[in-house]
Image: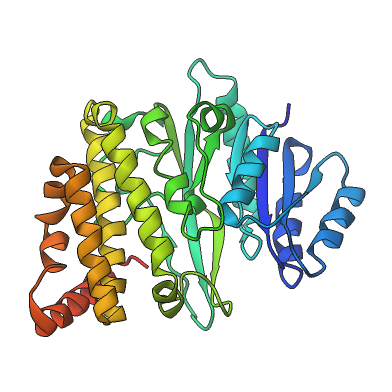
Length: 341
């Protein structure tokens, strides 16, 4: 069995995927790299086959019909044979020295008495045109270089959360918890780092800058204008998260710190949905914002109160055009102050 499976979802990635794959090959024989070609129309399939032929004991090329990022991640999990599992997007890469520390840590913990469920590390925003790159660290919130549980975590800053770039899960946990990301939907990475959490017991934080998250490619899904154009998909993911919280409320509420973390994460996602709808500005956008909050209220009144009457929830409901302008500016200030993207 391999120590770590890394899935690379690829769609028309021929222009940049080599940098990603080459960075991952430095992990050697302990790593299984699954290149998931999600129905690409360019040379992605040929590049994947090339790497599989050159590194047959490390790389596997899996071809499928186009189903979107979530579908490609699902395929990666299905084919994974490694003890642990990570997703690396095809336009991102990893740092070799941190990579080796990650693998050494996983190797050491794999033989321990307790099963490691989730390893967390830092990631770096590689933003086009920026001289200094922002690093997302967790040292203030998590114990480091030791196994810990939810009861040991400290306070996360508002807007700072464990993202797909930060995590490595135990593969069996992902399969056992029944994670199935929706197809043809953007922003499903939020579900990937949300739905498995009630099944996570033992965690480890390694304070190394491992993952390099590239921002600046044309058409990237995190661009605000593009996010507004895809707002229905953002709302879809938001509602799935609400459904999950409501359906697993008893299990989630049994662990106070996990409950608080998940509520705070959902609060940010709902705030982003609301701000994008306010920024959209049309009557249709504002109607969708009201419908989203009505949906939360109907789904679970306890959860609605938690989201609606916090600082962010209140700021999303200031009346009139002037109130909406204040909401957007307040969100911008929070972005700058709390350093979230």
